[in-house]
Length: 457
Ligand code: 4AD
Ligand code: MG
Image (cartoon, rainbow, N blue to C red; front, top):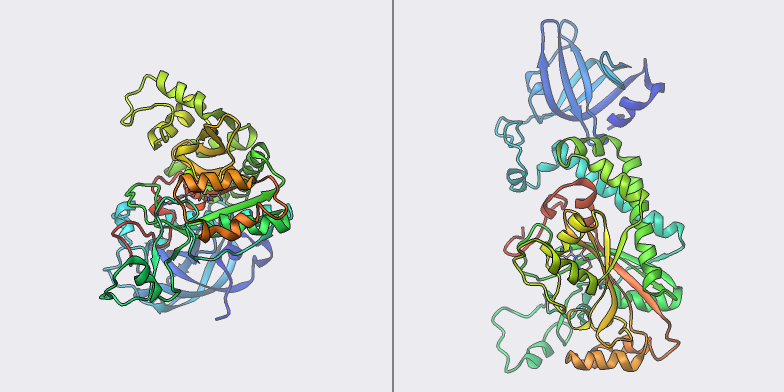
C-alpha cells in the first residue's frame, strides 16, 4: 500500500500543504459539533498523528472511530493547531480492520501485570512502543560502537556440547522419544541426534575466545539460554547477550571498554529517543534522564570484592543473606553497594575463585580471580566480566578442581598451547541494560515473549 509513515507526516516540513495517505490504528476518538478528532499511531513514532475530520464534508464509518481499529486516511498535512509538529486535515477515511469492543487494550486496564497476559497486543500501548523503540535503538548503537572500534561481529553456536559457565543451567537438546529406555546416561545419549549430550548455549564466550585469538577484537550479540529456576524480576530462561572478547587486554583494559561502550549506548538512547525518554522520566522512573546524564558524565566506581565485603558487614542493614568473605553477592548486597554506597554503577573486582567460573585468570594471591561484575542501581549485576586464564597448566588445574570433562574442552585448551595471549571479555545482559535505561522494573516487560520457569508459549 502506498502510504507515508506517521513519523514523516509529523516531522517533515516539506510535506506541509501536500496530500498524503497514512495507515495506522486508532488510539483515541473525540467528537465535537462540527469536527471530530482521531489520534492515529502506526508505531513509527512515539507521538501520534491527529487527524481532523470535518463532519459536513467527510463520510465517517462509525467503525473507523473505534479504539484499536485499523484505518487508512488521506488528507492534507497542515501545521498542528496546538503544539508542535503537523496534523492531517482528512479528505477521506476507510476501514482496514474493525476492532470489536472486547479489545483488551482499554485506558482503564493497562497495568503492566495485566498487559503481561496479552503479550501479542501489549506492544500497541505507549509504554511498550517506547520500550521496544529504545531496545531497537540500543541494539543498533551496540553494533555501531563495536563496528566503529573495528571489532568483528561473529555468530557463535546456539547448540553446544560444552557448558561455558559450568553451573548446570543448560537446557538439553534432544530428539529422543519421550519413552526411550536406556541403561545408562552414556547409552541414552549415544542414540541421540548428536550421539552425545547437547544443550543450548549459556554463553558464546568459549567460541568468542577462539575468534579473539585470531582477530583480536570480536563481539557476539545473540541469545543465551539458562535453565535457572529463578523466578525473579531480572532472570529469563532466554535472554540476549552482548559478549565482546579482546586479545591483549587485561582486566583494567576490559573494564575501560565496558564503561566506554555503555556510555556510548546510553548517549545514543538519550539522543535518538527523546520522546520515549521523556515518557519514562515522567511515568516510569522520576529523574531517569538526570540519572543517565550523570552516568555518562562521571566515572564508574571500582571496588575490590574484599572491600565490598567490609562495606556490607559495616552496613546498618539487616540483609536476608549473611555476608562473609567467600560468599557470592546476592541482589540485595549488590543493590546496597551501588544504590547506597556508590550511588552509581560500580565494578566489583577480584572475587574468590570458588564462586566464579573455571576460565577466569587466577590472581597471584591464590585466592581470587581477575573477574568483575558491573552493578547498577535498581538491578544489581548487568555485566559479568573477566580476564581469562591464559596459562595452560593453571587452567587445567582449575578444571580438574571442578571435576570437568577435559576432553570436551580440548580445542579451548589448545588456545593456550598455540600462541597463548592475555585476553579478556564480558557479557552484558541486554534486557537488563534495557531495564536500566528505561526504568522498567521487570525484565518480562522489556522482552517480546518472555520465557521463565513454568512459562513458555
Ligand atoms: O555473568 P554471566 O553468567 O557471564 C557469562 O556468561 C560470561 N561467559 C560472559 C563473558 O564473559 N563473555 O552472564 C553475563 C550477563 C549477566 O551479568 C546478566 O546481565 C546476564 O548476562 N544474564 C541474564 N540476564 C537475564 N536472565 C538471566 N537468566 C541471565 N543470566 C545472566
Ligand atoms: Mg554473572
